[in-house]
Image (cartoon, rainbow, N blue to C red; front, side, top):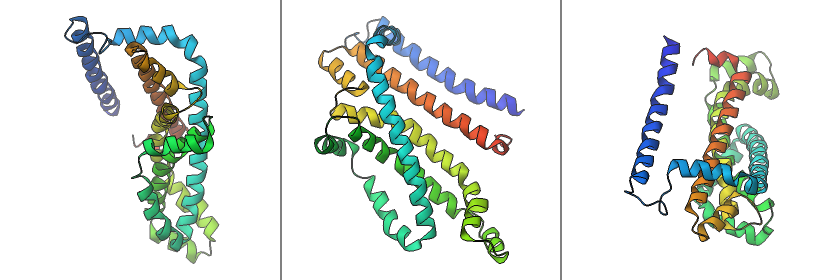
Length: 254
């Protein structure tokens, strides 16, 4: 029964996506929308394979920025979440600032970082880190707060230290929340690196798309968009696999 539900959950979105792609292909091939405005999905795929050799360097740059930005965001989010969970005053002081920071458009910050730190990889890594940091730390803090208080009190009554309570109760109970935030961050990191490159850079998929747009090569623009979607989905899947490997007990619930 559970297998049938899983199959159904996969078939429905795949079928719906297939219908959308067919409609896209139909309106372009029938001339309802001209190719110079909207290339067909076939054009986007064939263009992607054709330009892969020339965008190889740009792809490596974008992946490098996304990887380091995501790693730094994870480290910073975990460290700060632990501090905020243990120091209530720090949590009360920083949490509103974290929320306010998300109201600042990244399109405003990206060019500022480019002016302050140059056009290299460093400002793009900062952009990725800022985008990925928030969902991870918020998910972790909510995970820490959701731990059963009676279980914590039981550990305290048995003489457990704060470190023991954290390692044996709080962190294991918040791993699901951590991976939830990490999945969101993983899907955002490529996009964040792309935005940083779009605002100014020496290499990367964002810069390549900017050049393609100025050259009116819409097929190349859609090919890069398709590549970004694929990369984001792959990263999401990698995080999901890691979650299954590190949390085998949670697989039975799914």
